[in-house]
Amino acid sequence: MEDGRMRVKCNFSGDQKFLENGRCVSKLESMGFRVGQGLIERFTKDTPRFKDELDVMKFICKDFWTSVFKKQIDNLRTNHQGIYVLQDNKFRLLTHLSAGKQYLEHAPKFLAFTCGLVRGALSNLGVKSIVTAEVSVMPACKFQVMIQKM
Amino acid sequence: EVLCCANYPLYIRSVPTQGELKFHYTVHTSLDVVEEKISGVGKALADQRELYLGLLYPTEDYKVYGYVTNSKVKFVIVVDSSNTSLRDNEIRSMFRKLHNSFTDVMCNPFYNPGDPIQSKAFDSIVSTMMVQAF
Image 1 (cartoon, rainbow over the protein chains, first blue to last red):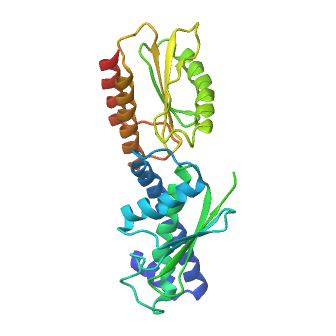
Image 2: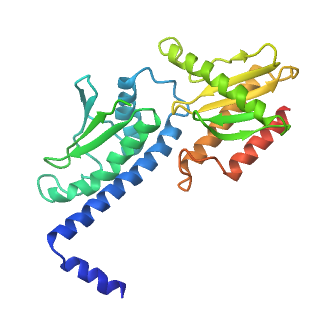
Image 3: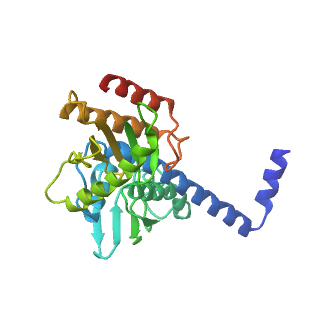
């Protein structure tokens, strides 16, 4: 019975599949959010208090990224007005996918969880944000963090 | 008494249990002092531990200690002034234990951040601490 319904879903138009995909991606993002909250609690247990927002972002790029992905963010850029771009030239979750443009359309699924992770970590550090990711050539990707003033 | 808040209480425990309302009030007012201290800090203190608040109300005869994590969660411990046996480093280690236990609660996937803490493990850590100290 379950199988039959599943098969019908695949026969739907591209729109339905797109919606389903969108729901999955946002679900992944919210899972990442919750994990990020817990992780940051553990990682900042013994660290001194953060001085400012930039300090927090540096922590995410160095310590947090290293603890989770065993490497640091390669490049951090900011416009000093609440937008940060974190560039990872060899993102761990993409290195096994491809080394170029192949499978580019599948990349968002693998980035959603990490976006949530960053958003959750920042949230528990008192920083409200929106995190998005973009990939042009794998395995490099950029995470854009937009700080929301509360 | 031990209390843990994120600007609204997530967990409150006191010994003896009567007079709990009085503690609510004490802690709420101490939160203002906490806010003051963490906003003033920044450059000077690289230390995560918060300054001890000392006596908040000379009349109440309570010593109120505070501790704030990087995730903005505040722990407050209220002890009777008559209890002079509790030393500084004992209070500090109590806060460490609380923080460790709280971190475990946070990492529990069934715990929703912002909810009251209902973890049995957390309860038992607090019980042990209160028995040892008071």
